Image (cartoon, one colour):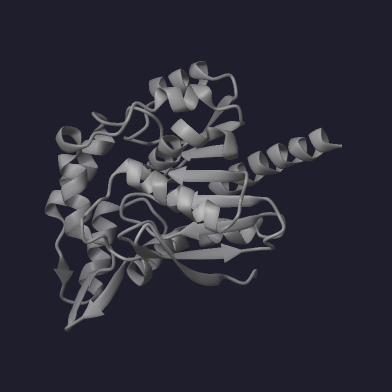
Length: 289
């Protein structure tokens, strides 16, 4: 097992928490989690990569052990600014990026102006123009109906299982441990459930995501799109358009997985990510010789 390291840094006025695995001298992979997740959700993947990559997984603003934003600025352009501040803090000129769902949107938003810094990009069930999908409607419904507290861990666990019926038991226990905490005899969220929900629900009218097709078409690095074969969020037609938009984009479906690919089928997900990164890193090394 590779040692997991925990660090904190002040970025853009908030204290951010991030985890790292592996040797800082190796190629860097930044892992960006989804809407209500946390950096440690990628711990299993990191363990499979840490012998050859330096894996960095931040808790994005309002999640995990990172500060909540008093101004409730949970929009894509701010997440992109946070990513920029983090990689500058880490003194990374170029880096690989993996983004799940919202994390992929944030990576593409950053790429609108800084795509030349990407060594590669992996989009886990994510891409431009997600609004209007059945998955977005499901997520919005969850945000509107999610309780703010639970009377004990069993009820919290039952809630997670009700909205994530296909993820592994280990993924449920990870969410219990890292997205929830006990306060005053109740189990409550570590993330800013109200603030995040308000931004996501009002986003289309208040501050919509930018058009991300130009970000994808402008990337000069290899791009892998990993779609859960049962996803309600990223449909095959949009994946095809992504591949047609840029010849550097390749796509792969992960069987037995929905939108939460790394939680639904971690073995196949880890294998696909590792094979892609090894291929990309090998090609970069050959190009330097």
